[in-house]
Image (cartoon, rainbow over all chains, first blue to last red):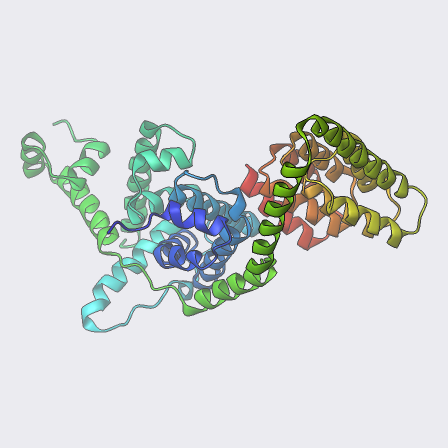
Length: 180
Length: 245
Protein backbone atom coordinates (compact mmCIF):
# COMPACT_ATOMS: atom_id res chain seq x y z
CA UNK A 1 0.00 0.00 0.00
CA UNK A 2 1.33 3.45 -0.85
CA UNK A 3 2.14 5.79 2.01
CA UNK A 4 -0.03 8.88 2.19
CA UNK A 5 2.08 11.79 1.02
CA UNK A 6 2.76 14.87 3.12
CA UNK A 7 0.86 16.90 0.57
CA UNK A 8 -2.25 14.69 0.83
CA UNK A 9 -2.12 14.98 4.61
CA UNK A 10 -1.79 18.75 4.46
CA UNK A 11 -4.69 19.00 2.05
CA UNK A 12 -6.77 17.02 4.55
CA UNK A 13 -5.69 19.42 7.31
CA UNK A 14 -6.85 22.25 5.07
CA UNK A 15 -10.26 20.60 4.94
CA UNK A 16 -10.30 20.80 8.76
CA UNK A 17 -9.35 17.15 9.26
CA UNK A 18 -7.01 18.30 11.97
CA UNK A 19 -6.05 14.82 13.17
CA UNK A 20 -3.90 14.48 10.08
CA UNK A 21 -1.62 17.17 11.47
CA UNK A 22 -0.54 14.65 14.10
CA UNK A 23 0.85 12.45 11.33
CA UNK A 24 2.74 15.37 9.81
CA UNK A 25 3.97 16.25 13.30
CA UNK A 26 5.35 12.73 13.72
CA UNK A 27 7.12 12.95 10.37
CA UNK A 28 8.66 16.37 10.84
CA UNK A 29 9.02 17.26 14.52
CA UNK A 30 12.50 15.75 14.92
CA UNK A 31 13.85 17.35 11.75
CA UNK A 32 12.42 20.75 12.56
CA UNK A 33 13.58 20.60 16.17
CA UNK A 34 17.13 19.66 15.16
CA UNK A 35 17.13 22.30 12.45
CA UNK A 36 16.42 24.88 15.17
CA UNK A 37 18.83 23.30 17.63
CA UNK A 38 21.73 23.42 15.19
CA UNK A 39 20.78 26.88 13.98
CA UNK A 40 20.31 28.52 17.39
CA UNK A 41 22.24 26.25 19.76
CA UNK A 42 19.50 26.79 22.33
CA UNK A 43 17.43 23.85 23.60
CA UNK A 44 14.53 25.78 25.10
CA UNK A 45 14.28 28.21 22.24
CA UNK A 46 14.33 25.31 19.77
CA UNK A 47 11.42 23.64 21.55
CA UNK A 48 9.43 26.89 21.49
CA UNK A 49 10.22 27.52 17.85
CA UNK A 50 9.29 23.96 16.87
CA UNK A 51 5.90 24.15 18.51
CA UNK A 52 5.35 27.58 16.97
CA UNK A 53 6.00 26.14 13.49
CA UNK A 54 3.31 23.48 13.89
CA UNK A 55 0.89 25.98 15.37
CA UNK A 56 1.47 28.21 12.34
CA UNK A 57 0.86 25.27 10.03
CA UNK A 58 -2.42 24.73 11.87
CA UNK A 59 -3.43 28.38 11.98
CA UNK A 60 -2.49 29.16 8.41
CA UNK A 61 -3.53 25.84 6.91
CA UNK A 62 -5.76 27.58 4.37
CA UNK A 63 -2.80 29.44 2.92
CA UNK A 64 -1.00 26.22 1.95
CA UNK A 65 -1.08 25.95 -1.85
CA UNK A 66 -2.59 22.65 -2.77
CA UNK A 67 -0.11 20.47 -4.61
CA UNK A 68 3.01 22.39 -3.60
CA UNK A 69 5.75 20.57 -1.70
CA UNK A 70 4.90 20.45 2.00
CA UNK A 71 8.55 20.11 3.01
CA UNK A 72 9.36 23.34 1.23
CA UNK A 73 6.44 25.12 2.87
CA UNK A 74 7.19 24.01 6.41
CA UNK A 75 10.88 24.87 6.07
CA UNK A 76 9.92 28.27 4.75
CA UNK A 77 7.93 28.82 7.93
CA UNK A 78 10.81 27.45 10.03
CA UNK A 79 13.34 29.71 8.28
CA UNK A 80 11.22 32.75 9.02
CA UNK A 81 11.10 31.69 12.66
CA UNK A 82 14.89 31.52 12.78
CA UNK A 83 15.17 34.93 11.15
CA UNK A 84 12.76 36.34 13.76
CA UNK A 85 14.79 34.72 16.49
CA UNK A 86 17.99 36.42 15.38
CA UNK A 87 16.21 39.67 14.71
CA UNK A 88 15.06 39.61 18.31
CA UNK A 89 18.53 38.83 19.57
CA UNK A 90 20.03 41.51 17.34
CA UNK A 91 23.37 39.87 17.92
CA UNK A 92 25.00 37.89 15.20
CA UNK A 93 28.07 36.57 16.90
CA UNK A 94 29.23 35.11 20.16
CA UNK A 95 25.78 34.69 21.61
CA UNK A 96 26.30 31.03 22.38
CA UNK A 97 29.28 31.12 24.63
CA UNK A 98 27.29 29.45 27.38
CA UNK A 99 27.92 25.81 26.70
CA UNK A 100 25.02 24.72 28.89
CA UNK A 101 22.71 25.59 26.06
CA UNK A 102 24.13 22.71 24.05
CA UNK A 103 22.49 19.44 24.99
CA UNK A 104 24.52 17.26 27.28
CA UNK A 105 25.39 13.86 25.95
CA UNK A 106 25.79 11.01 28.40
CA UNK A 107 29.37 11.05 29.47
CA UNK A 108 30.10 7.35 29.32
CA UNK A 109 33.44 6.31 27.79
CA UNK A 110 31.67 5.22 24.67
CA UNK A 111 30.18 8.64 24.00
CA UNK A 112 32.68 10.95 25.61
CA UNK A 113 34.91 11.36 22.58
CA UNK A 114 32.11 11.88 20.10
CA UNK A 115 30.42 14.18 22.59
CA UNK A 116 33.53 16.32 22.79
CA UNK A 117 33.82 16.47 19.00
CA UNK A 118 30.17 17.51 18.69
CA UNK A 119 30.63 20.16 21.35
CA UNK A 120 33.56 21.59 19.41
CA UNK A 121 31.59 21.40 16.21
CA UNK A 122 28.71 23.33 17.75
CA UNK A 123 31.14 25.95 19.07
CA UNK A 124 32.67 26.27 15.62
CA UNK A 125 29.21 26.55 14.08
CA UNK A 126 28.24 29.23 16.56
CA UNK A 127 31.04 31.37 15.22
CA UNK A 128 29.54 31.31 11.74
CA UNK A 129 27.09 34.07 10.84
CA UNK A 130 23.48 32.80 11.26
CA UNK A 131 22.91 32.81 7.53
CA UNK A 132 25.86 30.53 6.84
CA UNK A 133 25.08 28.35 9.83
CA UNK A 134 21.57 27.84 8.54
CA UNK A 135 22.91 26.94 5.10
CA UNK A 136 25.17 24.35 6.68
CA UNK A 137 22.32 22.90 8.72
CA UNK A 138 20.15 22.53 5.63
CA UNK A 139 22.89 21.09 3.43
CA UNK A 140 24.77 18.88 5.84
CA UNK A 141 22.49 18.05 8.75
CA UNK A 142 19.11 18.03 7.03
CA UNK A 143 20.73 16.61 3.88
CA UNK A 144 18.55 18.79 1.74
CA UNK A 145 19.35 18.77 -1.97
CA UNK A 146 21.13 21.82 -3.35
CA UNK A 147 18.19 22.32 -5.72
CA UNK A 148 15.75 22.52 -2.79
CA UNK A 149 17.98 24.88 -0.82
CA UNK A 150 18.36 27.06 -3.90
CA UNK A 151 14.60 27.16 -4.21
CA UNK A 152 14.16 27.99 -0.54
CA UNK A 153 16.71 30.79 -0.70
CA UNK A 154 15.78 32.07 -4.14
CA UNK A 155 19.33 31.51 -5.36
CA UNK A 156 20.96 29.48 -8.12
CA UNK A 157 22.20 25.95 -7.46
CA UNK A 158 25.74 26.91 -8.37
CA UNK A 159 25.68 29.84 -5.95
CA UNK A 160 24.48 27.56 -3.15
CA UNK A 161 27.18 25.03 -3.95
CA UNK A 162 29.89 27.69 -3.74
CA UNK A 163 28.44 29.06 -0.49
CA UNK A 164 28.41 25.58 1.07
CA UNK A 165 32.06 25.05 0.05
CA UNK A 166 33.08 28.35 1.59
CA UNK A 167 31.11 27.73 4.75
CA UNK A 168 32.74 24.33 5.28
CA UNK A 169 36.10 25.98 4.70
CA UNK A 170 35.31 28.55 7.40
CA UNK A 171 33.95 25.88 9.71
CA UNK A 172 37.12 23.85 9.35
CA UNK A 173 39.17 26.86 10.38
CA UNK A 174 37.01 27.55 13.47
CA UNK A 175 36.91 23.87 14.43
CA UNK A 176 40.69 23.48 14.44
CA UNK A 177 41.30 26.91 15.95
CA UNK A 178 39.96 25.48 19.20
CA UNK A 179 42.76 22.96 19.31
CA UNK A 180 45.37 25.68 19.36
CA UNK B 1 55.07 22.33 -6.01
CA UNK B 2 51.55 23.55 -6.73
CA UNK B 3 49.28 23.07 -3.73
CA UNK B 4 45.72 21.80 -4.02
CA UNK B 5 42.90 24.33 -3.61
CA UNK B 6 40.45 24.16 -0.72
CA UNK B 7 37.68 23.27 -3.16
CA UNK B 8 39.66 20.29 -4.43
CA UNK B 9 40.46 19.11 -0.92
CA UNK B 10 36.88 19.52 0.28
CA UNK B 11 35.49 17.66 -2.73
CA UNK B 12 38.04 14.91 -2.24
CA UNK B 13 37.06 14.64 1.42
CA UNK B 14 33.40 14.37 0.40
CA UNK B 15 34.14 11.57 -2.08
CA UNK B 16 37.64 10.20 -2.63
CA UNK B 17 40.75 11.89 -3.98
CA UNK B 18 41.46 11.02 -7.59
CA UNK B 19 44.79 9.36 -8.45
CA UNK B 20 46.54 12.62 -9.24
CA UNK B 21 45.48 14.28 -5.98
CA UNK B 22 46.20 11.11 -3.99
CA UNK B 23 49.74 11.16 -5.34
CA UNK B 24 50.10 14.84 -4.44
CA UNK B 25 48.76 14.22 -0.91
CA UNK B 26 51.28 11.47 -0.41
CA UNK B 27 54.08 13.92 -1.18
CA UNK B 28 52.80 17.19 0.31
CA UNK B 29 52.36 17.34 4.05
CA UNK B 30 50.64 20.76 4.07
CA UNK B 31 47.90 19.63 1.68
CA UNK B 32 47.59 16.29 3.45
CA UNK B 33 46.99 18.06 6.77
CA UNK B 34 44.30 20.28 5.27
CA UNK B 35 42.71 17.30 3.57
CA UNK B 36 42.62 15.39 6.86
CA UNK B 37 41.05 18.36 8.59
CA UNK B 38 38.25 18.43 6.02
CA UNK B 39 37.77 14.67 6.51
CA UNK B 40 37.62 15.13 10.28
CA UNK B 41 35.05 17.94 10.14
CA UNK B 42 32.86 16.07 7.67
CA UNK B 43 33.08 12.95 9.81
CA UNK B 44 31.89 14.77 12.94
CA UNK B 45 29.00 16.20 10.95
CA UNK B 46 28.08 12.76 9.60
CA UNK B 47 28.30 11.13 13.03
CA UNK B 48 26.49 13.94 14.78
CA UNK B 49 23.24 12.54 16.13
CA UNK B 50 19.86 14.18 16.07
CA UNK B 51 18.47 15.04 19.48
CA UNK B 52 15.05 13.81 20.56
CA UNK B 53 12.63 16.73 20.83
CA UNK B 54 11.17 17.29 24.32
CA UNK B 55 7.72 15.84 24.96
CA UNK B 56 6.37 19.28 25.84
CA UNK B 57 6.27 20.19 22.13
CA UNK B 58 3.83 17.36 21.46
CA UNK B 59 1.59 18.43 24.35
CA UNK B 60 1.49 22.02 23.19
CA UNK B 61 0.74 21.09 19.58
CA UNK B 62 -1.95 18.61 20.62
CA UNK B 63 -3.53 21.26 22.83
CA UNK B 64 -3.48 23.73 19.93
CA UNK B 65 -5.11 21.18 17.64
CA UNK B 66 -7.82 20.45 20.24
CA UNK B 67 -8.47 24.16 20.69
CA UNK B 68 -8.66 24.75 16.95
CA UNK B 69 -10.98 21.79 16.50
CA UNK B 70 -13.32 23.18 19.15
CA UNK B 71 -13.45 26.49 17.31
CA UNK B 72 -14.63 24.90 14.06
CA UNK B 73 -18.44 25.08 13.90
CA UNK B 74 -19.85 21.59 13.99
CA UNK B 75 -22.00 20.49 11.12
CA UNK B 76 -25.11 18.57 11.99
CA UNK B 77 -25.47 15.87 9.32
CA UNK B 78 -29.15 15.24 9.97
CA UNK B 79 -29.90 18.92 9.33
CA UNK B 80 -27.97 18.79 6.08
CA UNK B 81 -29.89 15.70 4.97
CA UNK B 82 -33.20 17.31 5.92
CA UNK B 83 -32.25 20.48 4.01
CA UNK B 84 -31.28 18.43 0.95
CA UNK B 85 -34.59 16.55 0.99
CA UNK B 86 -36.51 19.80 1.39
CA UNK B 87 -34.62 21.34 -1.50
CA UNK B 88 -35.33 18.33 -3.66
CA UNK B 89 -39.05 18.44 -2.87
CA UNK B 90 -39.22 22.18 -3.50
CA UNK B 91 -37.51 21.70 -6.84
CA UNK B 92 -39.96 18.99 -7.76
CA UNK B 93 -43.00 21.05 -6.78
CA UNK B 94 -41.75 24.17 -8.55
CA UNK B 95 -40.83 22.18 -11.65
CA UNK B 96 -44.18 20.41 -11.77
CA UNK B 97 -46.56 23.29 -11.10
CA UNK B 98 -44.90 26.22 -12.74
CA UNK B 99 -45.35 26.24 -16.46
CA UNK B 100 -42.20 27.13 -18.43
CA UNK B 101 -43.84 30.36 -19.61
CA UNK B 102 -44.09 31.55 -16.03
CA UNK B 103 -40.47 30.91 -15.19
CA UNK B 104 -39.12 34.19 -16.57
CA UNK B 105 -41.64 36.15 -14.53
CA UNK B 106 -40.71 34.16 -11.41
CA UNK B 107 -36.99 34.83 -11.93
CA UNK B 108 -37.64 38.54 -12.49
CA UNK B 109 -39.81 38.65 -9.40
CA UNK B 110 -37.18 36.88 -7.33
CA UNK B 111 -34.51 39.34 -8.41
CA UNK B 112 -36.83 42.28 -7.56
CA UNK B 113 -37.51 40.80 -4.12
CA UNK B 114 -33.81 40.33 -3.59
CA UNK B 115 -33.12 43.93 -4.65
CA UNK B 116 -35.81 45.23 -2.33
CA UNK B 117 -34.43 43.14 0.49
CA UNK B 118 -30.96 44.55 -0.14
CA UNK B 119 -32.25 48.13 -0.29
CA UNK B 120 -34.09 47.60 2.98
CA UNK B 121 -30.89 46.33 4.55
CA UNK B 122 -28.81 49.21 3.20
CA UNK B 123 -31.34 51.76 4.45
CA UNK B 124 -31.61 50.01 7.78
CA UNK B 125 -27.93 50.58 8.42
CA UNK B 126 -28.29 54.32 8.44
CA UNK B 127 -29.64 55.87 11.61
CA UNK B 128 -30.20 53.24 14.27
CA UNK B 129 -28.51 52.21 17.47
CA UNK B 130 -25.31 50.16 17.33
CA UNK B 131 -27.03 46.92 18.37
CA UNK B 132 -29.69 47.38 15.69
CA UNK B 133 -27.02 48.05 13.08
CA UNK B 134 -25.21 44.86 14.12
CA UNK B 135 -28.44 42.96 13.61
CA UNK B 136 -28.74 44.39 10.11
CA UNK B 137 -25.16 43.45 9.30
CA UNK B 138 -25.82 39.94 10.55
CA UNK B 139 -28.86 39.75 8.33
CA UNK B 140 -26.69 40.67 5.38
CA UNK B 141 -24.26 37.94 6.38
CA UNK B 142 -27.08 35.42 6.37
CA UNK B 143 -28.24 36.68 2.97
CA UNK B 144 -27.58 35.18 -0.45
CA UNK B 145 -23.97 34.24 -1.24
CA UNK B 146 -23.99 36.68 -4.15
CA UNK B 147 -24.90 40.24 -3.32
CA UNK B 148 -24.91 43.49 -5.23
CA UNK B 149 -21.93 45.83 -5.35
CA UNK B 150 -24.04 48.38 -3.52
CA UNK B 151 -24.47 46.07 -0.57
CA UNK B 152 -20.74 45.27 -0.55
CA UNK B 153 -19.84 48.95 -0.68
CA UNK B 154 -22.32 49.62 2.15
CA UNK B 155 -20.58 46.98 4.24
CA UNK B 156 -17.18 48.46 3.38
CA UNK B 157 -18.43 51.93 4.29
CA UNK B 158 -19.76 50.55 7.57
CA UNK B 159 -16.42 48.87 8.22
CA UNK B 160 -14.54 52.09 7.53
CA UNK B 161 -16.79 54.70 9.07
CA UNK B 162 -19.24 53.33 11.64
CA UNK B 163 -18.78 54.92 15.05
CA UNK B 164 -19.14 51.65 16.91
CA UNK B 165 -16.17 49.23 16.79
CA UNK B 166 -18.64 46.38 17.35
CA UNK B 167 -20.56 47.30 14.21
CA UNK B 168 -17.29 47.65 12.27
CA UNK B 169 -16.22 44.22 13.50
CA UNK B 170 -19.56 42.69 12.46
CA UNK B 171 -19.15 44.31 9.03
CA UNK B 172 -15.67 42.78 8.71
CA UNK B 173 -17.07 39.36 9.58
CA UNK B 174 -19.88 39.79 7.06
CA UNK B 175 -17.40 40.75 4.34
CA UNK B 176 -15.37 37.61 4.94
CA UNK B 177 -18.10 35.70 3.17
CA UNK B 178 -17.31 37.55 -0.05
CA UNK B 179 -13.53 37.37 0.23
CA UNK B 180 -13.31 35.26 -2.90
CA UNK B 181 -14.03 38.50 -4.80
CA UNK B 182 -10.81 40.33 -5.58
CA UNK B 183 -12.41 43.75 -5.15
CA UNK B 184 -13.48 42.82 -1.61
CA UNK B 185 -9.97 41.65 -0.74
CA UNK B 186 -8.44 44.86 -2.05
CA UNK B 187 -10.90 47.00 -0.11
CA UNK B 188 -10.24 45.02 3.05
CA UNK B 189 -6.49 45.55 2.58
CA UNK B 190 -7.08 49.26 2.07
CA UNK B 191 -9.31 49.36 5.14
CA UNK B 192 -6.54 47.84 7.25
CA UNK B 193 -4.56 51.04 6.72
CA UNK B 194 -6.93 53.17 8.76
CA UNK B 195 -8.44 50.74 11.26
CA UNK B 196 -7.39 51.49 14.79
CA UNK B 197 -9.19 48.83 16.82
CA UNK B 198 -6.81 45.87 17.37
CA UNK B 199 -9.64 43.33 17.20
CA UNK B 200 -10.68 44.55 13.78
CA UNK B 201 -7.07 44.78 12.63
CA UNK B 202 -6.46 41.19 13.74
CA UNK B 203 -9.62 40.02 12.05
CA UNK B 204 -8.68 41.72 8.76
CA UNK B 205 -5.11 40.40 8.88
CA UNK B 206 -6.31 36.87 9.51
CA UNK B 207 -8.79 37.00 6.58
CA UNK B 208 -6.29 38.51 4.18
CA UNK B 209 -3.59 36.00 5.05
CA UNK B 210 -5.95 33.10 4.56
CA UNK B 211 -6.91 34.56 1.22
CA UNK B 212 -3.18 35.05 0.47
CA UNK B 213 -3.82 38.64 -0.56
CA UNK B 214 -0.47 40.28 -1.28
CA UNK B 215 -2.07 43.72 -1.20
CA UNK B 216 -2.13 43.28 2.58
CA UNK B 217 1.68 43.38 2.76
CA UNK B 218 1.93 47.18 2.62
CA UNK B 219 -0.61 47.99 5.37
CA UNK B 220 0.81 45.17 7.53
CA UNK B 221 4.31 46.65 7.18
CA UNK B 222 2.95 50.07 8.12
CA UNK B 223 1.28 48.55 11.15
CA UNK B 224 4.57 46.96 12.18
CA UNK B 225 6.22 50.36 11.96
CA UNK B 226 3.60 51.94 14.20
CA UNK B 227 5.15 52.44 17.66
CA UNK B 228 1.71 52.62 19.30
CA UNK B 229 0.44 49.27 17.99
CA UNK B 230 0.02 46.64 20.76
CA UNK B 231 2.73 43.99 21.01
CA UNK B 232 0.36 41.05 20.42
CA UNK B 233 -1.00 42.70 17.29
CA UNK B 234 2.51 43.26 15.98
CA UNK B 235 3.36 39.62 16.63
CA UNK B 236 0.39 38.52 14.56
CA UNK B 237 1.23 41.07 11.89
CA UNK B 238 4.80 39.79 11.67
CA UNK B 239 3.56 36.23 11.46
CA UNK B 240 1.19 37.22 8.66
CA UNK B 241 3.98 39.03 6.84
CA UNK B 242 6.18 35.95 7.03
CA UNK B 243 3.45 33.89 5.45
CA UNK B 244 2.68 36.40 2.71
CA UNK B 245 6.26 37.17 1.71
